[in-house]
Length: 101
Image 1: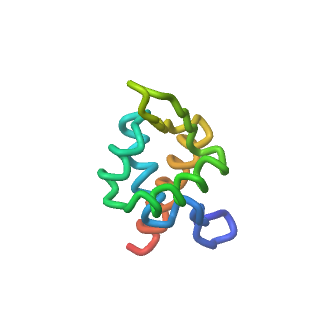
Image 2 (image 1 turned 90 degrees about the vertical axis):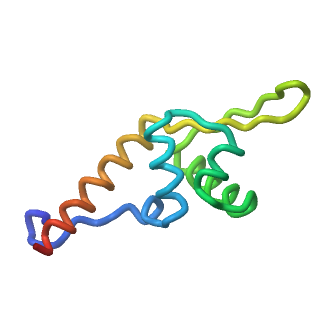
């Protein structure tokens, strides 16, 4: 709970289930490519791209595009801002969950 007695707020950008899965994966493995992450999160390429665009725009995730054997490869990594925001989200979520006991 906050000092004024209200529960802490959750970051709405992170709270969306697809983006939460992406950040959880990147928090653990630091960097991963498009195919691995979209497969891991169970999202279609289009849905995954939309969520990633929002995370990149917010500065939570970095995006690097390269070519490997003349094939495009996009790799993502969690930024320091993303790491701090994800940790704050988890802390606030645990405070909310713990507040119900």
